[in-house]
Image (cartoon, rainbow, N blue to C red; front, side):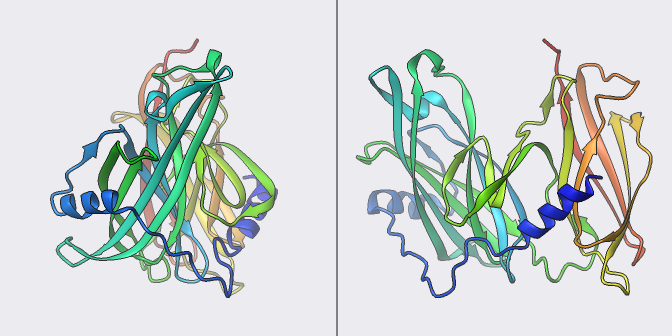
Length: 322
């Protein structure tokens, strides 16, 4: 384990994010043309796709106080964004709207709890433009625990083209978790530490930022077989030792179907200041070379202070190399 890196991650991730004392949150007004579509179709969650956009997933992490730090991930094709050309560049401009509805015990919308507006502006040299290429876009928000319906929209500035769709969001109360579990697992591609923290919500392309951590994941978990792979997650519901530290034993193995392909030596983590895991996974550097195909990385975590355990997994694919 990279102890120095993990110490830095711990330090930066526990800093307050998107919070400034005394500053009121800006009131967002979603245009009635968009708002009416959101409300009209929410019960059936019927999508309208004038501009194709795909909601892929959401990742969540501990934040300040009771709030949860959430990265919402969308997949958009270039020709959904870029619509004009100027001086050898392709240009795109869209408006993005998010509306969060709290839900009742049956999952029906109860009330609007938050609205977000963010502009999406892109430019690219025409010679590098591929209209069929997809990219991931992230939007970061902090929310309290609860169940939500997210209504998300892309619209042209003149509101002649409007897309609206929906996703169910469940955010657990991280302060009250009794059993051992993890935040959503993902493979880390790159990580950069910024000079100043990102404190305002923005749309980011193929990455997201938490405080001073600029993170680029492997969004689709597809590999050529020569990458350096690192697994990133928080362990939730763990107990501390009398010294106030965390102690874990973590076992990893790669499976193809029911067959074990790679089994790693147990990772013993002692005296950890926070239950944050950033583990390099030598999946492609061992003697056993994984052939192209679908695989699962299986994870077994034991909390050495409480005896509780958790078993998780993350699927990935090895593609034919170049």
